[in-house]
Image 1 (cartoon, rainbow, N blue to C red):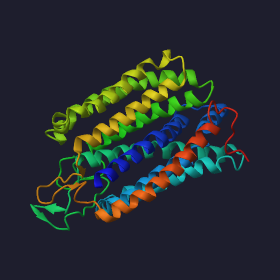
Image 2 (cartoon, rainbow, N blue to C red; image 1 turned 90 degrees about the vertical axis):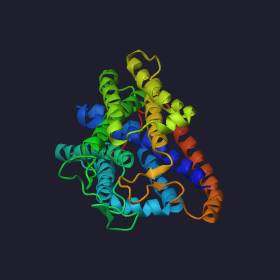
Image 3 (cartoon, rainbow, N blue to C red; image 1 turned 180 degrees about the vertical axis):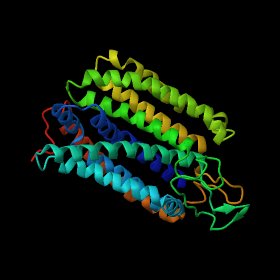
Image 4 (cartoon, rainbow, N blue to C red; image 1 turned 180 degrees about the horizontal axis):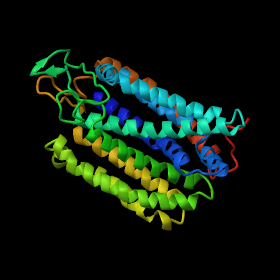
Length: 358
């Protein structure tokens, strides 16, 4: 039963990455490439009807984590308390940047909230990428010092960085050179994803420029992905052991590189939605491959004193997990109905669907 909920949790996070990921990317595009008011309106129109609904998937994933894997919830929310608070404030500023920008028509007012929206989107992409890096790298469960655990086996706490900025130090930080690399990969990937969404949902004059941006950034993304795969051996001596043991898992990296290579043809796509399709494949394949590489671990331990947190040792009682299935399928049907209606109502180009103008 715990494996069912594990799949559900990963699926929810994957949906969140794809859906709110294009919102983050649109915010980054808004920050760096939207120079005119017309361009800015095109970007906010593209995400306006969707961004708040997309964030619900993060809340739903948090609810599943609390219900199905309470020990992991308690451990991660206390250990990552500082970055979680920062992420919360960034989500708030991104939202109010969108909502308050159109309340007063004054250049200074609009500029402040434009920056709030763009910078918050950029930092959220960076932090979520670094969060994935922390999960891959692992944490010092039990706060082991000199071979002795100083706290309970599932407890840890991380500052933002350590003195050496190293992912192999005894006292780890949230940000080191490895987690920062994954954060940069997330920023580049979501910028591409957001650009593809804007191309898909608008006829903006910015679209031709965005196709060139996607093409160039994809070279950067390709180089970063290859570098991260090579560096992964430093963090995990056998990073592909699950893929060797279960060969069918190689389909996940295949999906990742299908999306990555497909993006190199963004300038020649005859339909605007193809770019978004390939960036979606890259995000889904990349996240799934990463999760598969550490399975069944949910949060690896970097010491040999306390065991890693796995699907089996952090799951709730079997009875509670089974009872939750009934309510889950009711909620799933309601969410799917909502999403189908939402995306059908707002299908096609969004140039004429204004947002935030009062």
